[in-house]
Image (cartoon, rainbow, N blue to C red; front, side):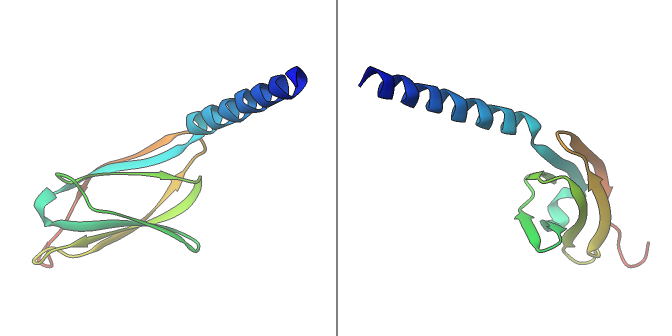
Length: 106
């Protein structure tokens, strides 16, 4: 019985350690949209994976797998939707900075 309890504790510690390491290795994609009130939603697309985020005060953040991602920002008129590509590296934060929406006249 003591051996079973010791084994269970060892397994729990190992699983917790692996999850802690995984969290440490997560990759992120972050940015801010201006004008903030004109951004409806932000999509991040990677192959068959897609994530949607509703920007809060123009800011957005995704926890993603590393690789090539297409970013799609749906904007309200008179601003146009914006689509661009970015690369996310393992365990790093890809900071897109301030993304400026443009009107059809710009």
